[in-house]
Length: 122
Image (cartoon, rainbow, N blue to C red):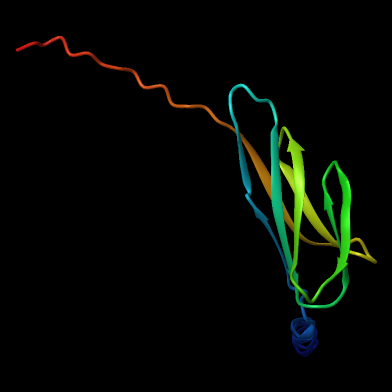
C-alpha cells in the first residue's frame, strides 16, 4: 500500500506546472476627496512558459484581448474604476485561470495635524 502511495506521489511531482505571471503598473490608484472614481492607464505585463492561447479579461468589464504565450506581452489598458478591479488571464480553450492581479483603488485622506500653540512665554 505504501509503495502505491509513493508511486502516485512521484507521478504527481513529474507533472509540469504551468508558470504564468501577470503584473500591473501601477497597481494602486489613489482617489482624492473630490473624486469618486479612478481614471488611469494601466500597463499589463504577462509572461508564460508555454505557447498556449491565453485571454486577458477584467472582472465586471469582460474580455480585453487574446494572445499566444511564450513571448512576453505588454498591453496598455485605460481603466475607469471606483473600487478594486481584478485582471485575469485564462487559458483560451479551457477557461482555467492561470494568473490574476488586482488594481487597488484607495481613497486619499490627508492627515490633519493639530497645531499646538505654547502658552508658556518665558
